[in-house]
Amino acid sequence: FLLACFKSSSYIVSQLKMPQIELRGMMSDPFENDESESSTDKKSSEFAKLLEDSFRTTRKSLSIGDKIHSEILSVGKEDIFVSTGTMHDGIVRRKELLDADGQLICKLGDWIDLYVTQARGAEIYLSPRPTGKNIADNLEDAFDQMLPVEGRVLEVCKGGFRVSIHGKTAFCPISQMDRKHIETPEEYVGKRCEFMITQFSESGRNIIVSRRKFLDEQRGISEAAFVEEHKAGSLIQGKVIRIEKFGAFLELTSGIEGLLHLSELSWSRITDPHEVVQLGQELNVKILRVEEKDGRFMISLSLKQVEEQPWHRLPSQIQSGHVVEGKVTRCMKFGAFVELIPGVEGLIPLSEMSSSKRVLRSDEFVHEGERVTVMIKEIQLAEHRILLSLKDLTGPQDASREEWKAFSPEGSGSLGTFGDQFRHLFDVKKRR
Image (cartoon, rainbow, N blue to C red; front, side):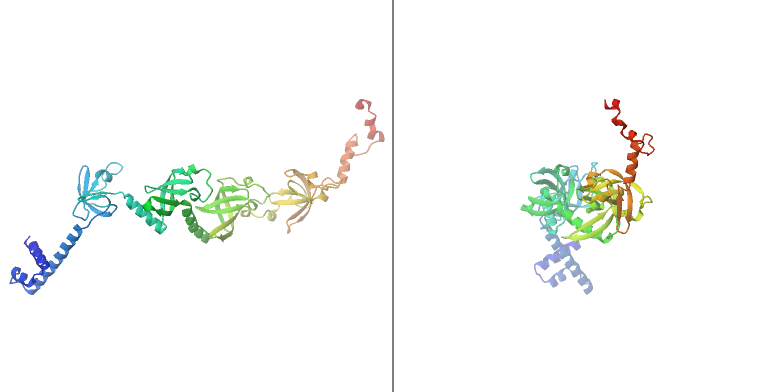
């Protein structure tokens, strides 16, 4: 105690600019050496600095929203007192430091982070939850630094959605909620999503956000990594997420889509993607091309090229002179195309359709979707061409034999007598 008084006296005298030599003469021990005097001066200087820092700290004031690191000083039934770094202790409502089971999450002597919620003279109230000012400051920082924030869609409103972001209400235009066209806005209500703040004004009272901007940025990052790993020609699995008239879109990984064009769905000729794929279906596809356009990557896919070209593995029955069955796929001015196996078509020219009359239109004899029996006349494997014939299958000789059999009583193929040929003219009973 005496030593503290001595140090305090030394500091006060020094502040009054009294000659320190007189103080030393009055207070020092005449038997102390010069070294002890130097040590005493050093300690006095340190104490003076600590005392000055203490005065500076007590002069510190707090404002609403300030974040401080506080020590638990005492724990009461209703309130908990903490240090604030000022001359006054702070108060935290006990219920704010309870967990879900009603247990206190801290104890005497612990240090916790708190936010000033009220500062009126000697009354300083704090809370572990940030204030509206803290939230506004954080959101403004996110806006300035273009950082994503999490929000929950509250409801659908005129032109878009109301979104809660850290307790503040923001507006998201309907065009900025997703990258695709939204037909049922209600499906987004209640969902938690990441948003980018596109406008922040009036201290957080006017906030506009965009989920689409966040998705675009994430897609750009994901696409760059995806393209680096997957090159043209590689195989990958995807899920059908959208079907259009011209093809199907597959999700290859989160946020990455590719187009499976109608012409790449099957080796067979199809007119509707639903003939081959369905929504939600998992497919193994081949990457054909990866092209960058307007800062985005366009990924073209193929389903049919996962399998071998059917022209490279023609079955044994597809040979010249063989009779096969196929389905008419197209009726053209010059003939009709018939699919013999998936992906392999042959042509019946108009000249090969009938031997008994002149054919001017292919649909006079066959129709699209009809199954017909044809004869293979010629195969040009290199050009992927097969010449088919109907008349060779039912040529004039075969047709005459069928007609002769119809006239022959025994069905043996002979013409019979003249009377046999015209007996129906004289059959009175039949005429009646």
